Amino acid sequence: MKKSKYLFLALALCFIAAFPYKASSLEHIPFYATNNAGAEVHVDCSGSWGRESCGFLAGGCPISAGAVDDNFYSADVDIFSPYGVWACQLITETIQSCLTIGPFVCTCDTCKVFTLEKGDDAVYVTFTEDSITVSLNSDSNASTAQARLAEESDTSTTQATFGDDNTKPRRDRDTWSIQGTEGEIVTVTLEADPAAGHSGEQATLILQNGSFTIETKTDALPIEITTTLQTTGEYKLVVQQHDIPEEVRFRGRYFLSVKSSSGKVQDIKPSEDVEQ
Image (cartoon, rainbow, N blue to C red; front, side, top):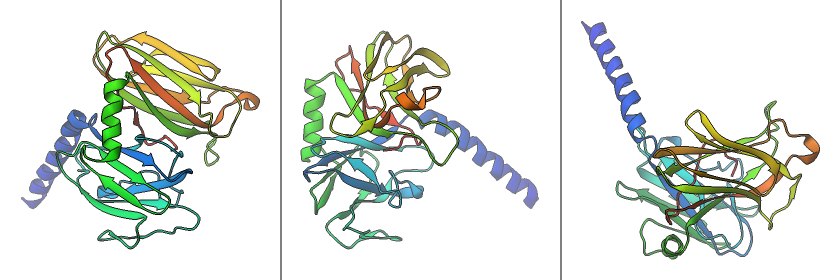
């Protein structure tokens, strides 16, 4: 009797894990960073169910000087709830971790603990070289800038670092996603960050709808793809190095932007393979 009970519970859990996740897997909570430090600063945020932006030991996510609402991370809303206690901290050569684990406790001004609750749809991290603040509402300077950007611009831009993955015998590949609407005209642009060092000039930009490739271009940056979306749903943007000779392969910081004919700024969501 006990065995059949446990078997039933296991099957029920599998059923719950499979279907609700599919229904909510496209939902996410973006993390935006505004850098008032005057130089590049690395940030790391960690929270429920082992979620972490770029990893403290990996050096965190680099945020360029002067960046406003840089979407450096997104927390998926799935069966493993992202809601609960989180902490964001600055990482530099002189600042070590100010965070104690279980429960999260910050011991200096370059670290901030906060609670993410249902109804919160974004996290706004603002910092200087020696302090950090986190806001979950539209009263923050960062969120105000984001709202102003949404009113004035039809383009959304994100950034990441692109280069050889030295830990595996393959070239780097970054995957992003956006939500599109049928009939919407989008222009996707991949370009080098002029404020950051880089080498080489060529990469491949791919726009996909599910497993179907709408268009792919391999060329010197900047690369641009313009198309009319045929369905409403998730679209993938892929930046990769496959089959590009080493002497011309692009390595370095890049910008990826999406311009929409609808006039609405789209969130560009990074997947786990994006090195930020």
